[in-house]
Image 1 (cartoon, rainbow, N blue to C red):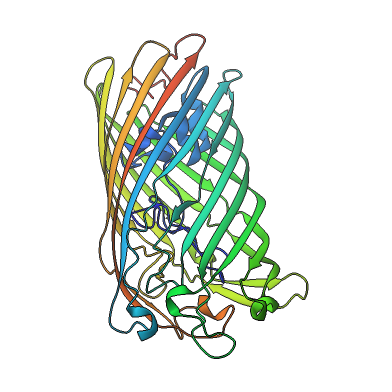
Image 2 (image 1 turned 45 degrees about the vertical axis):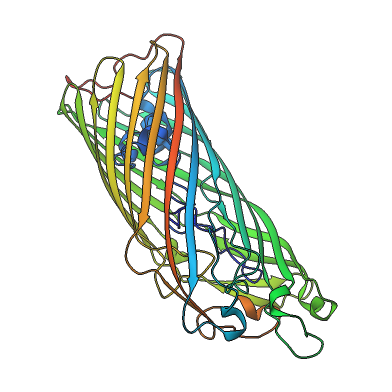
Length: 452
């Protein structure tokens, strides 16, 4: 996802890994942050305090109490990742001559939707759909790091119904189940070099593959505090979801068939805490701040087990660190119909030199965003946002003995790969908000309010 490489980075694992990930071009490791066009225009500052409209319920479901009546939002984001990996000194001589990855970026379209319905003065119902993890990367078929990844694809889909309760004029709370589907498809070269019966040219190595999917369930919860000073504070939580991924390893050679067949692996998605603060400066100007913590460190060492025997055939030592994102943004009502916004964010990646791989060559990144809302009429509002993400800091990769595991799944060999990465991403998002029935009235009791 990420080119922010991480953001779309790679779908990745490898044939030996079950969930390495794909990066997202948005939210650490292989998370996808693009769930709200409006929030994207602010670099997701204040997402938990409602800066993203009803779609902010991805971060904090309590924000739906800020939208009277029956409101529907739909968002569509196109993520254009550009990322390259270049081999350096230290790469195995058998592979170094194959050259770099080429552009591993694959364009992807990410949809997300959110709906809220006010039952009465106290209770709201909401429903959100989206892809919290995923995307795709694909290097050239033959390249110096092919033993660690040829193509990576992760797909997810989440369904999140919630119920929100407005305790009083300044406090709202909400919670609901989060049902998630997760699927991956991964390919890499076998890494076999020589020796009977493996006398295969390095330029024509066969691929192994790993496919698997799973359903899991967790929950989301949150609270919103609205002060009469025009201040809105929101805190949201998305729980970890346990995914018992079941699938199969495919191999091209009879001699390697002992490692093929049905496998499974347990993976826990990271839980997320998001804090947002939005302050009304005057009737037409608002400023927002955001903070996110993603508990990626729970994704430690994942074992891949052969279902028929119960034996561990490989492991996936992701060893991610926790991810942190800091953001600030502002918006201005240019007219009664047009609102413009901009924001900047800095994300500390869960991936650094100690755990970076060709599947997910991520690092810290900046996100610079702009956006606008145009109120077509009393019911329909059109949304637009553009973001550019670029990596900063260390970009080195070192795989091989003591550093990675993928090539060991089938051959037990250790193939050295040393490289340097570069990448960026451009994200364009469009969306709309539609108010059914009577136009939405002002939401808060404060003399100066922030509106969606």
